[in-house]
Length: 430
Image 1 (cartoon, rainbow, N blue to C red):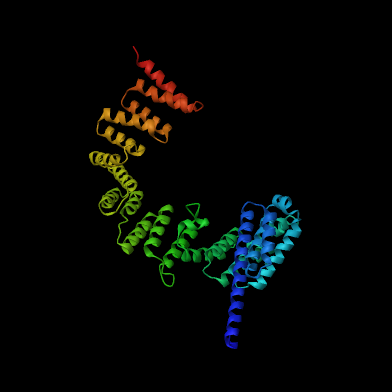
Image 2 (cartoon, helix red, strand yellow):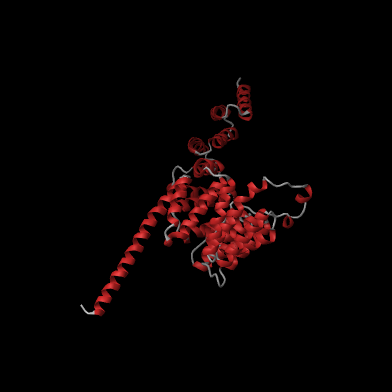
């Protein structure tokens, strides 16, 4: 073998040996990390801590090990019971160790989003315990929010701000900063973050600060502004999705005229019909004729799944009945019941329409069916009692009145209703 070939062979062996070593290290490290993560999610902090310490010895996995150690210590700080049971360390010692881990993360990974999020989490967890050792005066508590921040608040804010300097598009961190600022009374900072996060992520289901449904007008306005910004450059989010979400949000805020416009914009962006949503917004504004037209368009134009078609037909039937167009209402409701024969809302609505048309026998049968299958039996039984009263058949009204009292024996209203009915029935007897 020539010297050159011998050198090449030696290099190949060295390369293969190195590759095998690193591959085996990664595989072993993956198994250790999986075991440590599994122990963490089972709240077995001792086993998780041991696994991450072992993982820390392997260079390729040190960043993952540090993140794991930090999470274990943070959980221990949040749960004294777990700390005492699994780690047998004092709160001060756990805080010290967690601080060392985070300091090492800052040193080794200063451009990591997770590093600075961890800094913020650390000071958030430290705050309650530290507050127990502080003395507050009325003078301290009476100053404005911006002048009454704890040191942990300032450091947590700075950690989140630094994470956003690393990645300005980090929606979770931006929302966390907004919620923190809002809770501390730093309204301007919170509003700025909420505006940006709605532009980054114009999805209503992804934001905890919108979970309450209806929000105050200032937040509602910035949500609208942020979502409108999302469809513009440089974000260029899908306009159909954004405007549909915007319409839902505005409807939840009872801003129905604006919601109608948003649904029209979603329709214009996609070419698909959003007529049922537009019809809903018009009906909520009292524009029943316009809503009826739009519901009819939805039945003709929108590709509706059977449950949606039933909903549209029943909504149309309800509006037609409110307009006094009982025959058209009955036609719409019967079409819905062809698709869902046991739909409680449809049966009750057809009972009301039949009664309005003077079809007493059909109405009675439907009221009885509704009282037997509806999800709210108290209400449907009360409807049946009222129907028998309206038609002057008080003796029959006693039957559902007794059932109501059986379901709610302690309710004084149902007891009085039954007593009054019995007196009226007895008073009519010769």
